[in-house]
Amino acid sequence: MLDMKLGIIGLGGWVTTGHLPALTDLGIKVDYCADIDEKRVKDLSQKTGCKGYLDYKEMLRNENPDLVLVAVPHSLHASIALDAINNDANVYVEKPMATSFQEALTLVEASRKRNKVLVVGHENRFNPAMLIAKKLIRSGEVGKIYHMRGFYIRQRGIPTSPTFIKKDLAKGGAVFDIGTHIVDLLLFLSDFPMPKSVTGKTYSAFSDDKTKFSVYPSPNLPNFKVEVEDFGSAFLNLGDEITAYMEVSWASYIKENKMEVTILGDKGGVHIENGILNFMRNIADEYFISTPSTQPQRGSVYREVWRTVMDSISKGFPEYPLCSAEQGAIGVAILESIYKSALEGREVKIDIPQWLLKQSQLVS
Figure 1 (cartoon, helix red, strand yellow):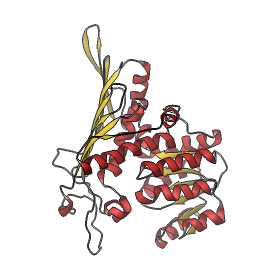
Figure 2 (tube, one colour; figure 1 turned 135 degrees about the vertical axis):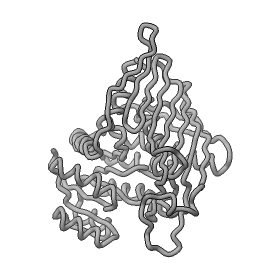
Figure 3 (tube, one colour; figure 1 turned 90 degrees about the horizontal axis):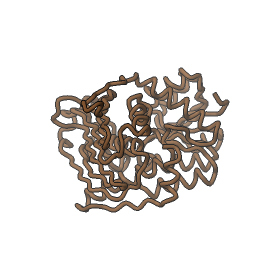
Figure 4 (cartoon, one colour; figure 1 turned 120 degrees about the vertical axis):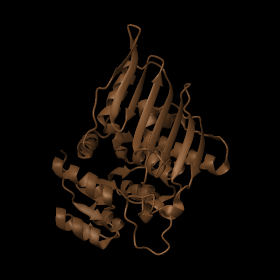
């Protein structure tokens, strides 16, 4: 592993339950941390020995970390990541990398100008089922992809943290929170075709019943209210004669939680549900189904993510299967278009610069 100074900005749940155990397992030291919550800073400083700050700008200015993990509310991802890049740091920013396409482009341009590695936290790519699906598609066994489907549906999973449900902090609800995973997987598995247009719809079906439709504890806050959507769906025209449908929900009347991706090709089909892959094809005129993978422990996924992040920084570019800045920006363009389509009640065209698309395909 590289000897570099690592700083973490934002010390919420995913940092403590996902990133930190992986960093510890790999022997990667956390040197600095920053959060506006003094208790979080104190707790992590005592646990890891890192130097804590309540002001991330002070941390950047005083310590000049080589690598920064940005894990803050969605609305702050882009601005804090940009500050870190401009402070000459490589950056691992949680998804979505930004809440507007223009913000995402600014990040891409800044990282390219300063020759810094910028990766986006789409760890679901590292699920063995997704990697096997990618190999099957690249080998030609699936044939020409013509349609894809993606679902991320919860029964009772409306977040109760203000960072997810307050409009000014989150900017959006289920589409930004979990829809970003589905959009990224659809693009990743299809080698980043050129998105053409989106027709989207969002709903706030259970916002008034947030405690009834959540397994998370309700915070003791005045005027606690869900201000963002809990459901979103979209039909995507991805160009190259590929279409896709996606559906995401924090809460819904379904049998069980599920995360599901289906890839339909003219030679075979791939179906992944909750980490289990099935590959369907014809062999000697018989319909054949194989199931070659199982769901890994979450910790092992994060270990692989961080191992690849460190390798990428040593080489100076994002290594497969990490999500590059360019790829993350295309995902944001689609997410932004879903919201625009839902707001205006019409199909929305997507205009992706050719240079951005070409760069996104280099590490897909």
